[in-house]
Amino acid sequence: LGPCSFSAIRKSLMPKSYKVLSGMMKRESHKNLRKAHAYFQKRVLRRISEIKTFPDAEKAVKKISKEKKTALLTNSTRAYTEKILKKLGIKKCFNLLIFGDSGFRDKAEGLKYIMRAFKATPGKTVCIGDAPSDIRAAKKAGCISVAVIRWFPLREIKKEKPDYIIRSMEELF
Image (cartoon, rainbow, N blue to C red):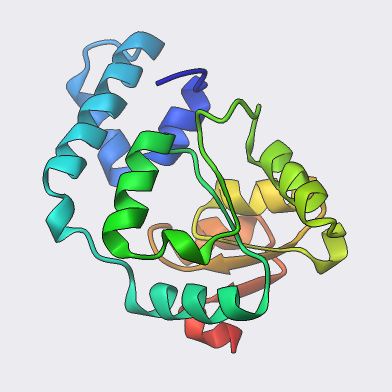
């Protein structure tokens, strides 16, 4: 998995998957969690034909990418993410891709790299995420944060005080 940190692996799993995987392990060691994460990704890729985007997300990404520079910042590995993006047909929508194995310490560092690459200022950079960790990273990097309610309960998202909360990416337009 490359230089992934324990917290990056934990955050890249959906909350329920993480609880299931960590509950399956007698003792939660970094080595065991890395193995579990690799196993999870392999299982997902075996069923890649079943993977779909949220319809609102696909539509929004395609629309935004026609008008603005876009980047994807994920805790998942390059190999895993590129296969999924290719299958979904949206890889070309992103000007820049940053993965969990790209060598960044955390997502905030990745966001700062994106801003440098795009010659953008934090006040003109919007970070759209669906996890509390995405909002924390956006705030740490000084970006405008938009939380999309997907996997995490609204109360968990609100704790991070995002600049905006939306239920559908169509609300961006």
